[in-house]
Image (cartoon, rainbow, N blue to C red):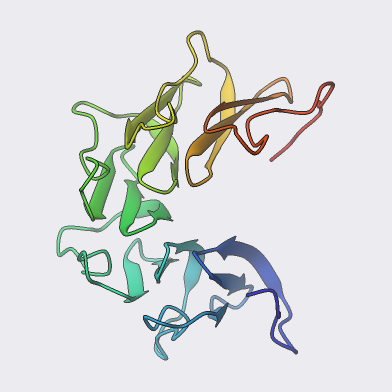
Length: 208
C-alpha cells in the first residue's frame, strides 16, 4: 500500500483502508492500490464524477457528484450492497466491515457488520456535518460542535470526553478517537497503549 502507482497525478484527496489506499483525482476518477484480497482496489471502470472516497478494511467507497455511492471489494457483511434509498449523500466513511453515509439533510445511515452495534446509528441523531469510521465504532460531528459516538467500546473509544465542544473535525483509529477543536488543539480518547491518545504537549494551530 506504500507503493504509490507511478504516474498518479492530480490527486486531490487520499484515504487508507485496511491494507490498501485510495486516491481521488481532480477529474473525478478514482485510483486504488495495495492488498487486493477482496477486490478492494478494483475500481469500477464506469466510476466517474467522484467527489470523495472512503476505505474499509477490505472494501472501498466513492461518493459521486449526484449524491449516490459506489462500493466495491469484499461484501461478506453487505458493506458493499448499494441501498436503493441511499441518495442525497454528502459524505462517506468506512470502518472495518461497514460503511457510513452522511445525507445532505444531516442524518446518518450505516450498513454492514453490526456485531458491535456499529450500524445502530443513535436515534434522533441529526444536524451532522462530518462522519468518521474506526475499527468497529463511528463518530459524528454535529453542527453545534459536539461529537456523538457509537459501536464497540472495549477501549472507551465511544466515551466522548465530558465537556468536549467547539469541535470542527473528527477522525478514528482502530480503537481510538480524535477531535479537532476550533482553537487548533486536539483531543484524543480510547486505546492508548501505544501512545496514540497522548497528544504531544504544546500541539496547537492544527487545521486537520
